Length: 270
Ligand SMILES: [Mg+2]
Ligand SMILES: [Zn+2]
Image (cartoon, rainbow, N blue to C red; front, side, top):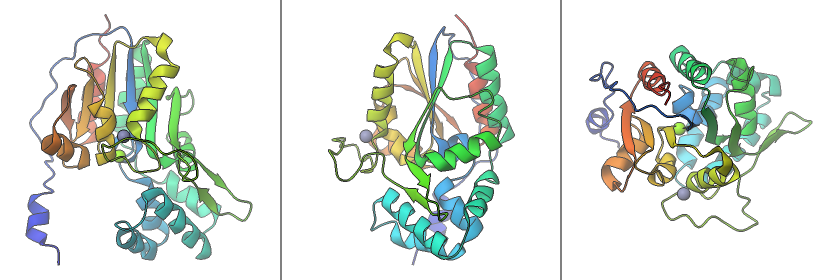
């Protein structure tokens, strides 16, 4: 049995944490990297679809998670969802109903509008169909917020099944990251690859907005001029505290309204 008292103490969410909106130095060019689930979005796509459509599969998600590779498990659960008879339209409706905080939307759009030297990259362990369905429903594709979206591939089959695959196929060469990234993707490698593809952009700094344990790898690769906007009470904050080894600056947030204030601090132009 889980000790519920221990769980309660170790998952305190401060509704009104101490304010920490000290200015951030100006920059002329910067890259803002967003994780998706619980960072840009105020929910988790892989779990949400089952919470909306099939509570049975949401429970199976928890039961299977310790024994299966995460993306493979999500792919399996989508097959089960399809067998239960849920249509493509139902899944798309569920995705479009997923919460994204107005403060977060305001923050990214204001930063994009008022600091022309800012590029946005989405780096997510969700998948391209989920993200490709949610972003337009929140007004984030017109005009596009993100310069690139890096995530797992997925596509609809004619019978309405959503076929999800790992970004790194299990049949080819695997990533060599030893920080603990899941087999389907190393977010640190993906961030490095993006920087290489866009070397001509010469970003003065990188800002990484994340919450999960799998955001630790890319954050660990940031330099002293870079900043991580880390969501409290989640895997990334825990790993930074327990494993350390971080060179970048860290600013914490709990609610998206705080992240909005941090994003606005990035508008300062040099
Ligand atoms: Mg996340
Ligand atoms: Zn990694």
